[in-house]
Image (tube, rainbow, N blue to C red; front, side):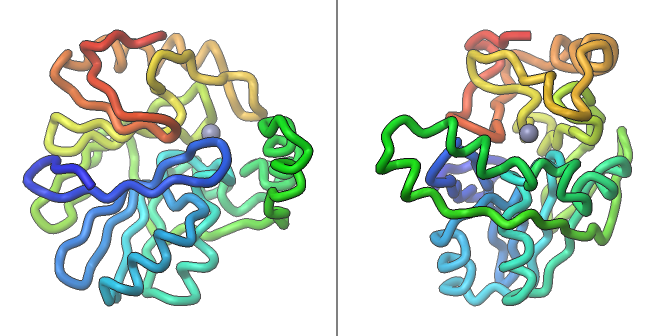
Length: 223
Ligand SMILES: [Zn+2]
């Protein structure tokens, strides 16, 4: 747990590929940025007696939306994504869940690790609300500004919390270039639309990426 914008942020990670969910709690409400596969996340929300959960999706790839179906069985959920994300999250080919086992298999080294991987069944989810570039989503005392950042995927967005904390999905990672070669990825869009946004960010912004550890823009950003 860490503090940001006067709130606690709880971080949950997957067993493979080090994907992150960031969780804010106020009373019996929760806000998640992405919903990765994590038993701890579900237990945490149950223990906190959460009623209603808002989920902001950074993009629609399977590893960032995998908990949505199981959370939907337990809680009142509002799923929010970019306008172009509607189509991605609902389609097992576009959200890459049809190739998820393949991707995970090649990420693991030992035979035992490969055997321990959970099998992922291709799936799709629906969205309840879409947000466009420049809009602000308000949750309690927090303000999330949306930046449309295509390149890694056609539906990628940044959520900037209170001008200081950036939830960047797979578009901005610590010390790594984003992957632009997946279906729906586009190098030209990344260079044209997204790179200028990243270059305009203040050095004091703290980045909460979709995979790996958080970092400051001032630590050096690989474009
Ligand atoms: Zn991704």
